Length: 191
Image (tube, rainbow, N blue to C red; front, side, top):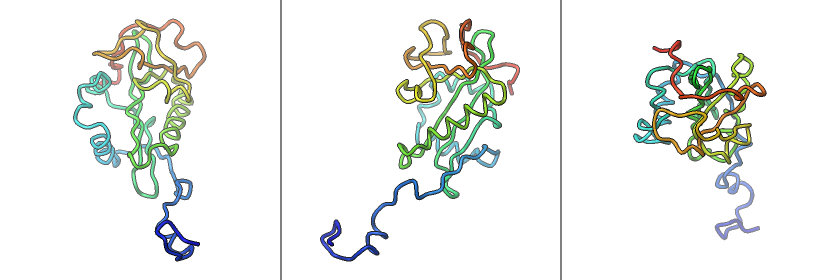
């Protein structure tokens, strides 16, 4: 049988040259550690570039650190393939979490890594008693894990944000029912 290069070299050549599906690689979701910080920052640089610092979500991150116990890395072997972080914020006077950034190395996108990170982060947040998670992102992607658009005017970010991209997930049914106001850092967690 001829391979894609017009030669009949058999299965040995195809095993060496044909890409293997992601399922053959071992994906591990781990709690973020202090040792991951530099690698995650480099990942953010590669995927978001320098423009990330002017985004409204980054303004919130200037004053309050993410919660390491609710932040996770995705590794394929020892390679950092993605990460997700959760930051303590308030919507008005209601405590919540801000999800992000969720980052996956470009060659590994579309293979379930982002979803695995989201599932782990939301599961752990709920287990630790958190009720709401807010984010700025694409509804089509995040709706799969329970995020819905914030009704226009119910929550305002500290800077320009397309209100259609401001999403919320209730980790407890009805947790967002009476919540409204400005999104700000949870000052009780300030550095």
